[in-house]
Image (cartoon, rainbow, N blue to C red; front, top):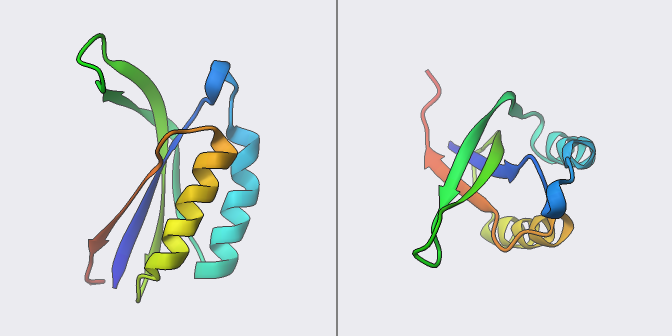
Length: 101
């Protein structure tokens, strides 16, 4: 079993709140994987420094799904679609092996 975590920005380019976009995303993931957990109430702060200057900041939420097999081509395509839809250079999707107790 694997836990897949999707880190998504709260705001898009220009400060637009992306909350309305996530309804369709949640519906798609629930239909495909049978459920999800969304950590949306307390956004985390993301920091990165691509140019060595002042760090860039973002508020992020995390959505998790559990899968038995990782379909890498589907996840790659999904990430690319999210980056385009949300106007982001990069969306982080990561996976962790897990054991349900």
